[in-house]
Length: 103
Image (cartoon, rainbow, N blue to C red; front, side, top):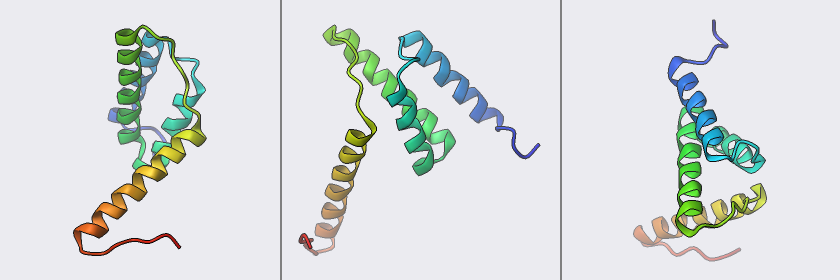
């Protein structure tokens, strides 16, 4: 069965489903979109773990600060990711003695 998920992926995906359901975030489309974005970048197993980590952080902040969930749009997430990548590239360039300048 080439199209069936591996047992580890199936368990991780089921775990993500139950974590979303238990946290009350099962209807949040932004988390699903971020999971799809990460799935394309990291692969299914790492994307599931990373998304579960995001859900855990969201739930922790909701409980700690007693606030409602504020969804992050995919565009905002992509912007934050791009800024993070630029910062990382600049740091690596500086490590090798280069300086990046905007075009």
